[in-house]
Image (cartoon, rainbow, N blue to C red; front, side, top):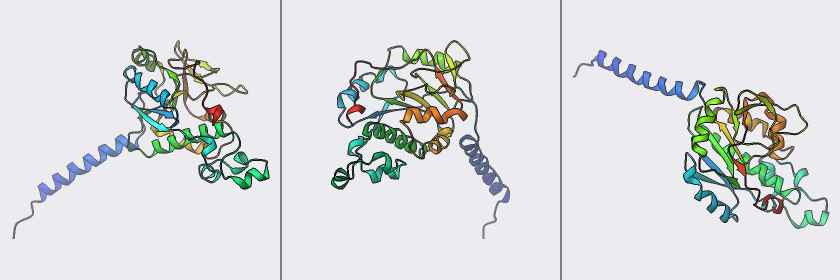
Length: 256
């Protein structure tokens, strides 16, 4: 019968313990680092193939490949499935009894509901990914203008964002915040309404559970709900904006 080599077994076990510990430290212990774009998601309706084609042409000006996220078309969503993701039927049902009998689809504010669900469902998906806590998810809508020098501007501007960031807006409408340097504002929620738009924002992976808790139920359009609930997060705004919406595009949400 062969003798068991205890020292060899001990060394092997120690090596495995160190390897497992290293992985656990990487994934579980929060660290501080400047924001990075580690993946890019474009929210796009199935019917808006022209917008997706235009975005794919701009991919060479972005630091990572584009991944498409299918947007929710509000008026085609059932009230039951919307309710399952936090949109109460009181918000989506028609005031007309005959319409209520005829359909179970969202019949009110379909554009706002569709946009809200699109972003929440993408956030839920991102939260399931097996990536590190500092992994940066860039969420874009399909109407942004991407300048040819975006990567160089991003690499410069991101160095001015504090390492404690949870969310970084690459651009915002009516930006409100304390200017901390020539490129970045620290988010403020003191005005009645500000920091609007969800056309392009970066989310740190470890912040996703906190954001999803704030998005448990819909009580406002997605950008307004962010503004009303993000006060306790570390949110920064790049100002001037590095990415802006294409003003020449006709809104698709108005037709949902």
